[in-house]
Every structure is written in C-alpha cells, then in structure tokens.
Length: 171
Image (cartoon, rainbow, N blue to C red; front, side, top):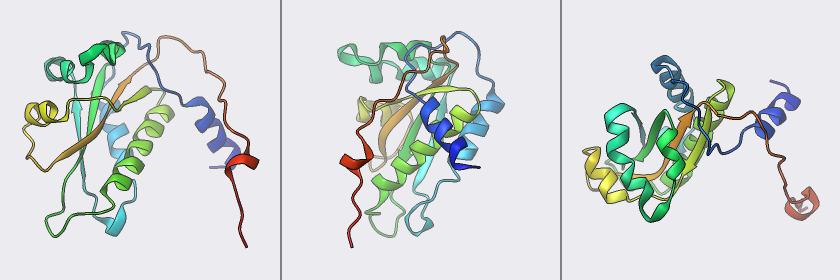
C-alpha cells in the first residue's frame, strides 16, 4: 500500500452515527474481525476476544450502551462488536489497554476497507455487559464498536492541528 492510499483510508474513515437498513452479511462481519485480530500485541499475548453481536443478542445488550440517552443511533447498527480484554493468567498484562486500542483501530480500519461504517462506543455499563456475555469478573470491555453500512455518503472534512503543533523532533 502506498502512503497516499493509506492517507485516503485515514481521511475517509469516520464515526458513523447514521446507519442504513442494509443487512451486514455474516461473512463480512467475520472477515472484519479476522483482519482486526491480525493486530500486534505486547509479548504477542493477544489478550483479547471479539464478540460479534447481532439479532436478539444485540437487542439484549443495547440498553447497556444507551442509558442516559447515550448512543441512540446504535439501534440501527447491523452488528455490535464487544472488544474484550482478558488477563493471560500468568500475570497482569500491563499493556492490555494499549493492545485493545490497537485492536480497535484495526477493527474500524478493516471495516472501512470493506465499505462498512463504524463507531467506537466508549460509554457502556461494563458490569451489565460482562454479565450478559457470560464473562468472568476480570474481563474488561473498554469499547463496543457499532458496525453497519452508512445511510449517507458524505465524508466530513478532517480538522486536525497542524503538524508543527503536534510533531517534535528532538536531537
């Protein structure tokens, strides 16, 4: 991939809050997750699991993402993917938050390459989600990603601070 192509991917990917009713095929959802799981992790621990939620299970967990009026647009998402981090059993993985962040970035970029919109949902009721997914108490669910085809093709312009304000080279 050329740098220009990567830049176009980064410029085109945005948080979708207006999903269409177009169904998301199981093969597409599975491929997005397969590609995301190629993400690197500290010590190659891969301290994660992805739970793809559709149908009745998606409807069951939506209330745990929408209290206080949050994430109402997630109703129209065709799938939700819970990003779950688990201790590797040997010792607490001090890099797990970094690993899950990298995995989440891979997930949304993989979706974008397949024409699927995404939105990272950080607001959630983690204890209720953990119980609904039958996960052990130590499991962490830092984010859930809403997936589906976008209802509109408008790409918002990215407004970023200039490189001169955010990049520093030290000698």
